[in-house]
Image (cartoon, helix red, strand yellow):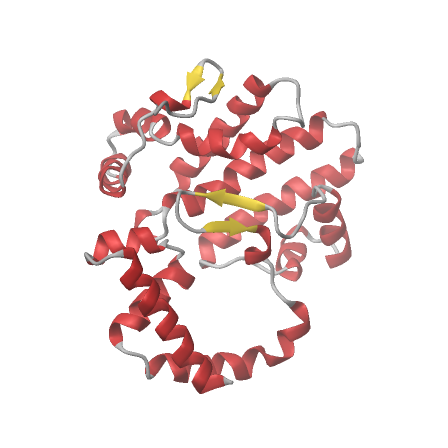
Length: 258
């Protein structure tokens, strides 16, 4: 059976080598230990990730070659800043950075124009957000970003919002052959925020009563962001067993907190 062909910038996805988890980790260790020759391998081994993200933008621009190059810039930034010690899957880390570069390009080349001053605030805010995230290991609040820039929360929030595209909550962000990541998965439900403290306490207590393997799988799936396929490969059991253990763990948690 012929493999599906997508060609951009002369790159045929059918001929792109996709790195395994082991190959990716080995190359990142070499790269982060100073072997810069591995960077090209990491870039070429993740081009399919860039191309898969660009598929949904076919109707948004007349020049996919330019968009591909912009996506590769995002990929390179992700490679340069990726921390293997965080135990987060590279694609999970890289997808938002690639999307960020692509959407910035589309916004700047689009027909809807945003005032230069607002753009400047938004770009500075995103830079500060990235710096604080890297420094503290978590995303900062708008208030923290505003304080760093000596601006009001409204100015920062308004600038960031003005640079966003309007898209469906159920738009798929990325699918690596396992579970699909949707935009809705990344959104916080503000209306339930007043339950957060009680829920966190109940959830922590419920997690302590799980079997060790169930607890490990739920942590890797929902905190680290790994797919069932990845966990099956790492633990050495089938994806069906991972699915059953995940469901069992979730059911046990529901019994404790609901």
